[in-house]
Amino acid sequence: ISCYLSSETPDMYNDVPCEVDEEMRDLVMKATGDHMLARHVAHLFVRDPLVVFEGAVEEVPDEEATDHWENIQSTNWQTMRWKPPPPQDPDHADDGNHIGWRTEFRAMEVQMTDFENAAFSVFIVLLTRV
Image 1 (tube, rainbow, N blue to C red):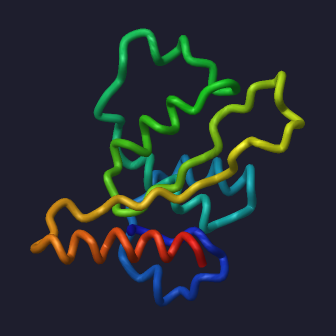
Image 2 (image 1 turned 45 degrees about the vertical axis):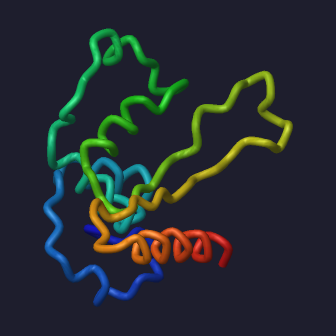
């Protein structure tokens, strides 16, 4: 985890130097006023996306799809990922079934034993129920 998003997170937990795209940080800061969010998003934009699919750059409307955001997120492989809600179908905007923001946990690539694999999986399930 490069940086924490919560404004309630003590500074001691954000002690890892975190390279940021200053232009992106300023843009998000101006739009939201949230310096933690601005730092997180600006850190994602330090690198160019590794994968760009033909026909999925200018042709994908940002107001209707999260493809561009997911592309930036997926090129920054971290143990946790902040996922925005998918675009909502306008025909079902008021049915109350739309999912919100999510946190994706990504397991370590290699655990030493089957027990450690199982322990990590159980820990994540318990953590999601708190």
